[in-house]
Image (cartoon, rainbow, N blue to C red; front, top):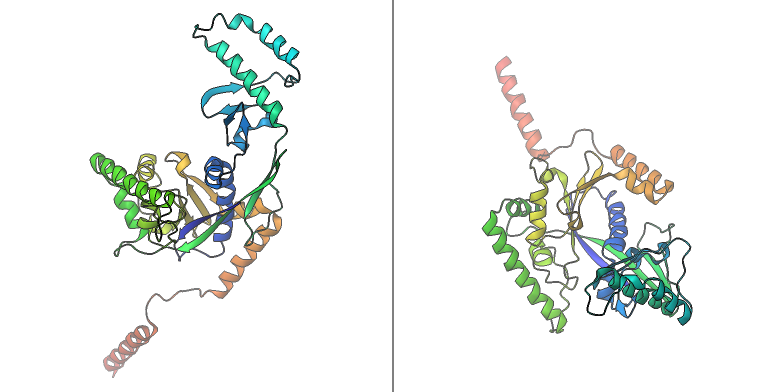
Length: 351
């Protein structure tokens, strides 16, 4: 199953950096959004003790740590231990741990942990071996970043593809101005917009769930309010934003974790800022709770392989060679027209 994540992108960002940023986001999603992907694709990846635990990476069965979402349970087996293979071994395990369970009505947490541990081990025995593999030699091209999940019932492929899409202004306001306005909201305004936008998201989620014609599969429009704050498209809340860092460099948005967390509370998804001057990208992901992580462009491409790092350097060299030393920001006719007026005025003075 391949899942597409749109990313509203400022068109002023260097095109050489965008593919690397997309690849970094794809790897991020495969780890942090694995639960949501499994739920969205309808794949029951892992069953432990009859309870669905759709956490392939974080369950880490091979490392000996298992977690169930329905109950706070951590089973850390002794090194070298193996699941019981027979009823006799199960009875022996229970007999050795009998001191922890005094009675049926006794609210004893250790006895519950022992009982649940046995359920987990039985589930693993019934389930068999699960292998999760993410190939390291994935190309930076149109193919998605993917992982393979091999179970006794077969092999599943889960892929993520982040695709940039040009962002549009909203009623004359740029994306950076919308973020600045929401980050400056007071307590009551924050509470109002949080509830208001959540209600709108629930409406669109209901339309998609009921498969309402013309409303269930709306395409991305480029409008950050419709695509992100309202989640009115087919992609639901899975839409990212890539902004130019120069648009917010004068503000304290990235220096204030509370302000960034407030943006996430009022409906904004993860935000990414590309700094073409310092050649870095700043990831302000929703899972970071207001914190941001900065990574140089070169590190992103080097993590994909030495060849990709060289390609990025070559593209940057070509870009520098092809661009003028001084960039004219005004119309050429205006420049030459003003120069002609200055020359005529100078000739009048010396004549």
